[in-house]
Image 1 (cartoon, rainbow, N blue to C red):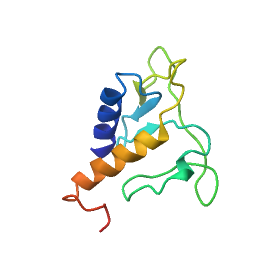
Image 2 (spheres, rainbow, N blue to C red; image 1 turned 60 degrees about the horizontal axis):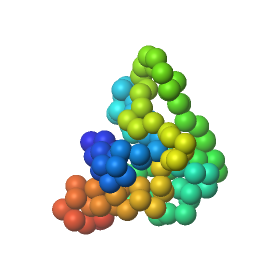
Image 3 (cartoon, rainbow, N blue to C red; image 1 turned 180 degrees about the horizontal axis):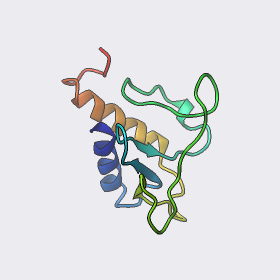
Image 4 (cartoon, rainbow, N blue to C red; image 1 turned 30 degrees about the horizontal axis):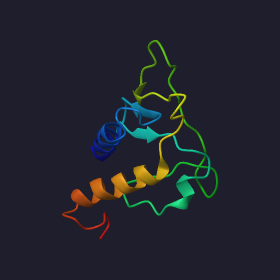
Length: 111
């Protein structure tokens, strides 16, 4: 799954201080990256990545698991920290483009 691969790469790249990443264990088992307000809209995300924010036809919401205890079907792939309260949007965008291009033989997804 591309989302899990992006999460693994960003966690490794940041020395295990990637900021808040949430996984869902139901349905398509999505991976959600919590970004600073308005930062997702600064990028053109490739096909296969979905921005969930206010505006347009998309509602802004995130189901966030508790920091401790059972929270099925959500869990933390990476916890927020004082030094990294959000995932770096520029880094996430670059890794997402790279991972999704790998899955399409080096072409941008949707080409």
